[in-house]
Length: 439
Image 1 (tube, rainbow, N blue to C red):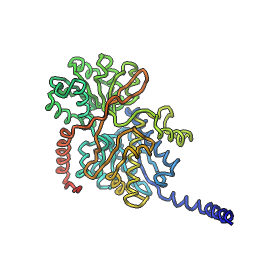
Image 2 (spheres, helix red, strand yellow):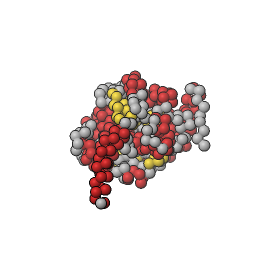
Image 3 (cartoon, one colour):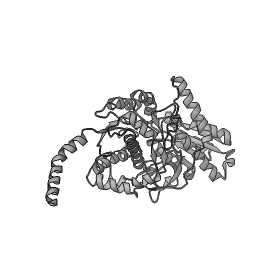
Image 4 (cartoon, rainbow, N blue to C red):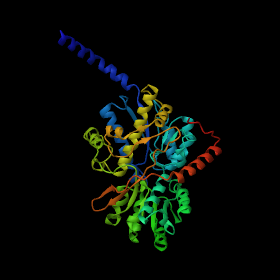
């Protein structure tokens, strides 16, 4: 009798299964990506896009999406062009059925253009570790999130690292630090912070802009050879990075005194210089390499099914991992939005709430297959930048791998805090914004 009942139950479930599947797939979660797989910045844009996309594919294949709701990934090519990026946004923001839930512009220029649009369209923008630094102030920028750290955080960490190497922050007096930067809104972001630190700690600051796309840098490095800065920082992207490292090598600049922003620290940046890049440093907020359980899951559920977006052997590269962690935090915000609002059919406005309640602990990172990959992140209504911690990684040219070689430094909030308050207040005044209360 029990076996008969069981058989009838199984049969009924089998009949109902197509209906249940159809119902489950009627609603999809739209996640657009503003990619650039073409143009001068493609070598860096491609691995990031691959890591982001592969995670979404993993969730669809392994879990049936996010909490059982399939993801509708909509990729749009920007070629790292601001105008094209805004067009992509406009063309994808109303994608059915959910409308765009969140945007990751992967461009400071595009991010700046989307700041006012996001508030009108009620779609959050996750400019992870880039974009407008003062968007860290959630009272003025309720739709923009730039965790886990900002460019200003990173600038303070680099100066702390230099201070450690020189024997203390007081030993920075009289030193010369050069900044080689992409001559754009992105490249200019750290200047104000470095100028404030220069005044406080007594080092001189040499500013050296490099025009798009960054292939012509002979004059820049001749000036560095002439000025002989003690340390050189770089805010570069794309081909600019590899050209700078080659030029630094050509004048025999010590690579262990050359530090790039975390967008100037990928395999694509150092490998063209060969052994000459050995010892080069860059910022980091996550680990390199593919030795994490999540990478194994991606290989099993995505690449073994021939659904990977890149080459299998490039899984775990720095920018692949950056795209991966960007997708992880994005998905966790969507999960949180579902939890807060008690529905799986969330919209952009609800996902914003998910970001503001995001709390990805070390225990949760372990559950996600990323133990020790990055640090815990907790976001609030007022704080959209997260902990702001930054480590340094170093390139081993012989082993052809990056390795984190420092602790995760805390940012100097006494430097960045007043700058964020000043800049966000000015933005609010210029745009007629009354900062909201986060009590």
